[in-house]
Amino acid sequence: MAQFGQLFVSVANIIIAVILGVVASYIGVWLFTKSTRHLDDWGEVRRGNVGMGIVMGSIIVGIALILKPAVDLPLTGEIANPFLVLVGEMAGIVLGLFLAMSAIVFSLGVFDRLVGDIDELSELQRGNTSVAVIMAAVVLAVSYLISGAVASIIRWFTTFLGT
Image 1 (cartoon, rainbow, N blue to C red):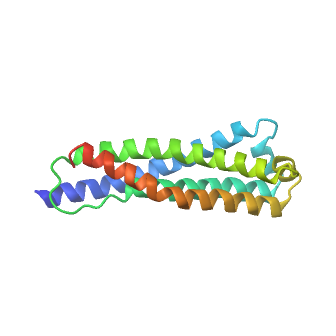
Image 2 (spheres, rainbow, N blue to C red; image 1 turned 120 degrees about the vertical axis):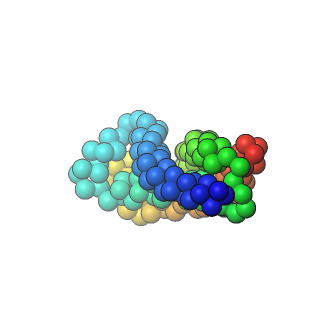
């Protein structure tokens, strides 16, 4: 019976990863566009602004890096309640998305303050790909660095729920 539980959770993981991955990516990009109040981010993308595409793409990849532990739960031993595993996974994804976007927006804000003499958003609007690559690198570096902490939090959720 434990093997059936593992199979159920594995198949559910695929479905959750696809659906919530797309939804989390959309929410992440939407939140980014809200934080760039004076820019029409999607308008810039439609105009072919490669820089904006690089930054928005890095946010999607960054979110995936951070949320990967939520859909990468180890399935060893007996699973007492596969439903609780999925609840823990979804709680981890919600918390991970919140932490991901908070960290990304915060890190870009801190980076902007540290650089000071460059208005990154204006440069993005002008299509400055050099600035876009640097911003994307900040997003990906922070995402990579916090993914371990998010994995620990997700493990706590699954342990707490008795899986």
